[in-house]
Structures are given as structure tokens and as C-alpha cells.
Length: 190
Image 1 (cartoon, rainbow, N blue to C red):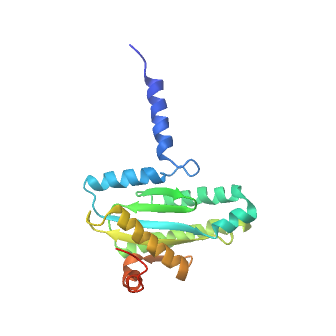
Image 2 (cartoon, rainbow, N blue to C red):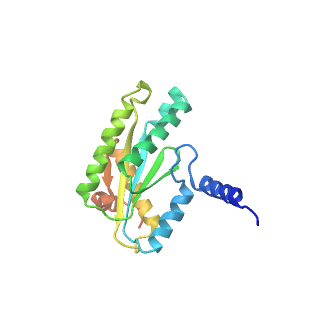
């Protein structure tokens, strides 16, 4: 008989590292795609994505150094985990995060969670002068079924995010609220 406990633990550690963002310990981009695709194939067709980007993050890094940028990213991961404890959260790269909710929640419920997230972020960012200019912009897109692909939903949430950054930095925008405006300006392709 051979004890494979160590070998198994090593394989599990490698698997964890391949799925996780080293800094925030959240899921990474690759695992986000794998997990969400798998989850939707298993029957969870409804999906809401909250695409989050930190405002003025580059200035933080340029002014105070990457250690402060890293601290902000770690804190953002913790804030998201607290705000969305039952949902799937990933760091897509840089200062971009995504929350995948395997449902289309009532708008009021989601807005309440987002408002609490913003309040927690403001409280954290106000604790250190280095973070005083940081904020976040969010784009939200939902689909009731598999008929809307993950890539399409990501594009919609990204469009809503950049609409927010352009027009209402530091707020959130639902794709459904701006869809017609974006289509009329031909800013999106569907």
C-alpha cells in the first residue's frame, strides 16, 4: 500500500492556485469562465453579472505605489465577499472584479446590496488619505435563460460599466436602462 495523502494534497494545492487570483484569493478570470459556464450548463440559466471597476486606481498606484494598490485590491475583494456572500466573485485582472449571481434578483434587493457595498467601500476608503479618491463604478446585466450567452452578458455588463464611468463615475448602471440609448448611438453590437 502507498500513502497518497501528500500527493493528493499537492494536486489540490496546484488546482487551487490555477483557479485563484494570488493577491485577492478570489477566483481568477479563467476559473470564472469555467465555473459560470459549467453552472449554467447544469441548469442555472438565469444569471446576473455585476462588473466592477475601481475609479482612480491608476492614480493611487502612480502616487503612492503598488503596495497601496495591492491593499486596495485586497480590501475590495473582502468588501465584495461580505456584500455578496452567496455569490461567485472573481478578479478579472487589474482593478476589475465581477460578481456572478445565478438568478435575476428583484432590482430593489440588488440595489440594496449595492448601496451597502458602496457604503462599506466609502468607510474603508476614508480610513487612509491614500485611498480618499478611490471609488468604484459598476455595470449590471441580467439574463433569464441560456439564450443569452455568457460572452454577451459580459459585454452588456461591460457596456453598462463604461457608460457609468463616462456619465456617472462612482455609481452603477443597469444595462436594461441604457440599452436603447446605446443602440440608438450604435455604441454596442448585439
